[in-house]
Amino acid sequence: MRSKLVFSGGMVAAALLAAACGSPSTGSTNPYGGSAASPSTAPVVAPNANPTPVVATGATIGVGSTRLGQVLVDGTGRTLYLFAADSSTKSTCNSSACVQYWPPVLTTGTPQAGAGVTASLLATTARQDGTTEVTYAGHPLYYFLSDKNAGDVTGQGVNAFGGPWYVVSPSGMQIG
Image (cartoon, rainbow, N blue to C red; front, top):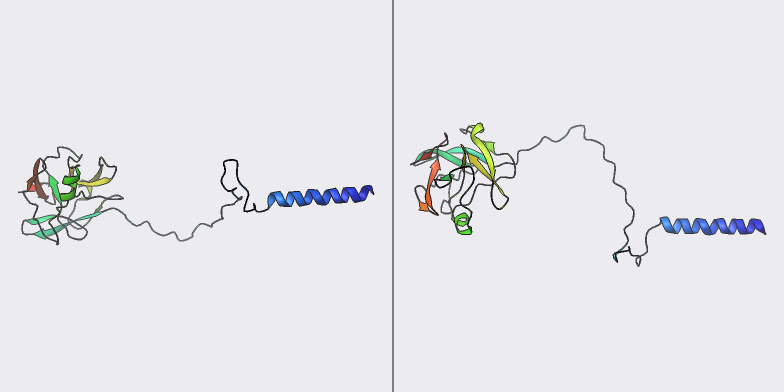
C-alpha cells in the first residue's frame, strides 16, 4: 500500500512540475494584470565569416557647375547655401517658416566628400530639434525651396530671415 502512495505521490508531483514548466493557459495573468509571459531563450547565431562591409549613411556633398561657377551640391546635384546670419557652426534658421524655405542639409551618419570637396572641411552640428546638420568650413548648409533642378541657384543673394543667403564655393567661401 505504501508503495502505491509513493508512486501516486510521485506521479502527482511530476504532473504538477510539468504543468508549472509548460505553456501558460490563455487565462493566466502576471501580478500586474497582463498576460503572463512565457519563458524564452535567445537564438544562438554563429558569427558571419564574411561580414558585410559597412556602407556610408551620411549625406554626400560634392561640387557642381552652375551659372555662378563651381558650387557645393548634394548627391543629386541640388545647390547648397550658407546663411550669412550664422556666426558659428550653430544654425540660426530654426523657425518653422525659415526651415520651410531653407531646409537644412541633414545627415544620419558622417557626411561623405564627393568629387571636388575637401573632406576635412565637412562636419556636422546638432540642431535645436535634435537632428544633425551638415557643415562645410564651419557653415551650416541649406537648400532653397525654389531650387527644383540640379544647377538651380535661385536662392543666391536672397535676404530673408535676418540675413542674406549665398551659394558655397568648394573652398568653403560664399560666392557673391
